[in-house]
Length: 309
Image (cartoon, rainbow, N blue to C red):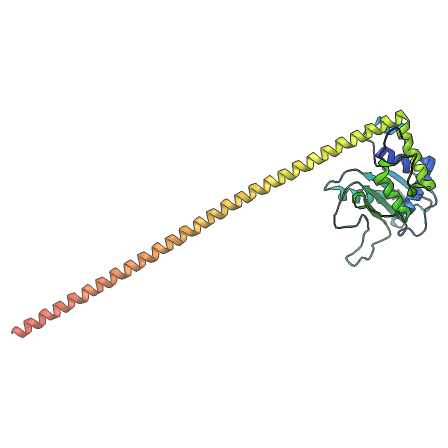
């Protein structure tokens, strides 16, 4: 290819899965990811926000996720996320909940709600202890699901390390993780399917067509800029948090030292009071002893006077 193209860049991602001219790729992708979730395979979809090259070229900030609905009314949302930040899980839940709530138009009730499936492909790790693919749904601590509202699926690409491509899901994940390295002249065996070959044709268009490549490069540079800003912001936040913790610890140390000095002073004052009490006790004992001696001397003098008489 003339240029290496990363299918994770959102304009390419949406051209693959969000173009009305090849909805079968989206259908194939949904069935691959949601194989164990769907009651029956998806056979038809309507893309609700189809890929529009002119629109996305004009607006660097355009939202390029994919939203679709199947013939049963089930809702689907697919999004590529190039960077991870602390509030990303909250955003995932919010997007899913918004898609669920938007189904209720005037005259409809809760029984009309259809399952909504939100799929996020993340080029980063949300939780290092979890597997690369996780699904989340409303349920209690025992795992009992509340309602039939669908689920949120999260695919963390850095954790995906297949030794062999065994499933269609593996094929899609490997494409998005390693697609930038592919050579259309010498495709690996795992790319030798109709869906993957057509996907490669779409990627090749961004490589060979100058206008599309400029669009791709603009999006890639913009996403890199946003990722850098996000990374710098997170670094700043971490440094600020560390500095705040350091200052708080310094204050705690000063307070601890003050308390220790205060306790030492109280102990010293208590020791002085104890010594003063001992001094006073000795002085009183001496006074009593002196009084007793004086009384003995007086009695002795009286006895001597009586003897002389």
